[in-house]
Image (cartoon, rainbow, N blue to C red):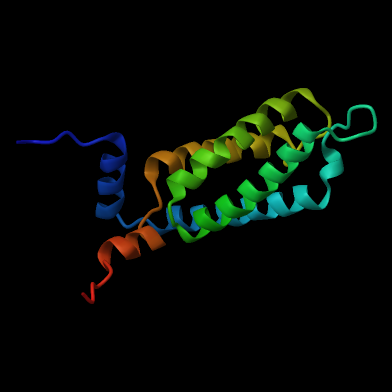
Length: 149
């Protein structure tokens, strides 16, 4: 019985056949960029528009969510460990950054529509492409844990 390959399986197979290390380097730099932007946003949360001088519960929750997800997703993307899951968690932030930066003068976590759009496009590309050859996912796939039982 022949099974049908999904888009993700085809992308993984394509990446395994062609060891393109610059794609992995871009993934690592993208992860570092996401970590840096998460830190930058956490350092200056006053960039979030404040309604009536006080932060509401929802605004505080969004600030904490954005910082934690960006730091965690950046680390996971950088090392190539469950990158697709990290990118799925990061996508709402990136979509929000693109929408918000295109209509406001102050930007939540990104310094312009260009960076937000490039980040979104990279995230979508790595959502399809996966972690790449030089990643923890590939290492764990090639070296399964040894059972001592």
